[in-house]
Length: 526
Image 1: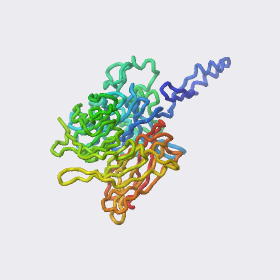
Image 2: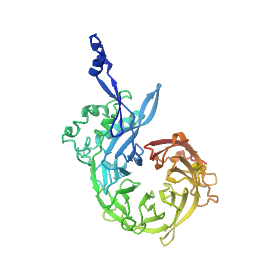
Image 3: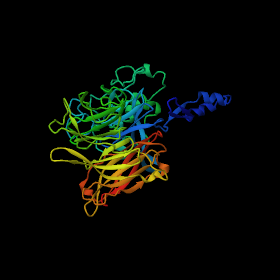
Image 4: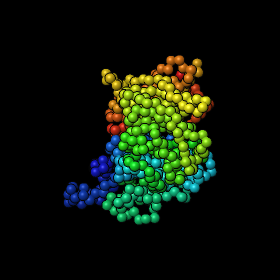
């Protein structure tokens, strides 16, 4: 039996044939009666968003992917090992649904990362614990979520099935302060961070879910779980037993949240910084960007004077020195962090507007992104159909200047005059030619759903400044509507394998309700 839920979900049931032998003994039993009295068992089914996927974010360690959508959910995707035709393969599946909301989701950013400190999972430490994210929706509030213990054990089990040599980590035995699971009250929007309250009242009309003891057995890290024995949560369980508790709300915006970005210190010891924007009312005040210290739950900076209309895209440089913003006014602003302030952002965090490029594009700028390996290189994509590469030059007196290095169009525009560029993203990857010229790897998403990967020069000594197409995703594997976001999976740096081929992964999401994950093999030697 196949069922279609009101919210867009699919459900599969299969008749349990184990009890049919006894039923067949009664020859007088009608076939219809046999079907009614039969036992039907829920089966794993295809899951996914059913409205536009607005944003996505990788876990800082690349362990899983979070996506958020206008279907009012945030979903967690991970690699799951399975056997197909006798061979072990890995497939990306939805294994969690951290947030089920009452407003259309718009943005998401991860803020917790792994640390080498002994107190890496201590909620009282200065930094954010690992496995934490901030989300924004068509409301004025930002919400912070923290992974429950059950999700961490499941992720560790999946990782161990992919690689049996994986050592037992803190994810396998989560800290005592983490709750086992969260629940969503019947008339509320906030996932409660407790399991002591009886949840049967909110779930009694929703049908049965995986019992807590069965869920715990399926993801017990101390047990040897095979791929055949692993029990992944079903569609109903995803929205009930796999929720993440909401730990904090951030208030301050006057209208609906539009976009988010986060800066995570490389050492993992400093508190992360989150930047957010909201729908503007064509004035400077409402177009302000807010900076948040999530650990303290307070706004530590308000950036005004840069824009007069909605800021649609934000990007921190990897070192946190710069913040780029742009949007409907076609202006790209570069905000520079004041050198005299502490990196912990305890009381205030002052970013100053140091330079801006008016009319950087002829139409709205949909996306900007800093190159991870070169914090002074910025890329922008616009509705005018062009991708532009910018270099930020800092003077001796601390002043900044933006210089346009390169301008090109995606090749997928066909016979059209232009194809709007809706998403751009640099990979954490740099290749070098024999003459020492460095190239960055840039992915581009367009309004028609096509995705391309380009090699662009990022060295100052390149006389040609010419972009080259590396890979164009086949049309049948692309989105069939506008690409909303592209993000590359974080990778570790290995200096001993500079010349060897590298497998890179990037994810895309779009208005066609889809999330796509691609793997690309590249070489650091041009």
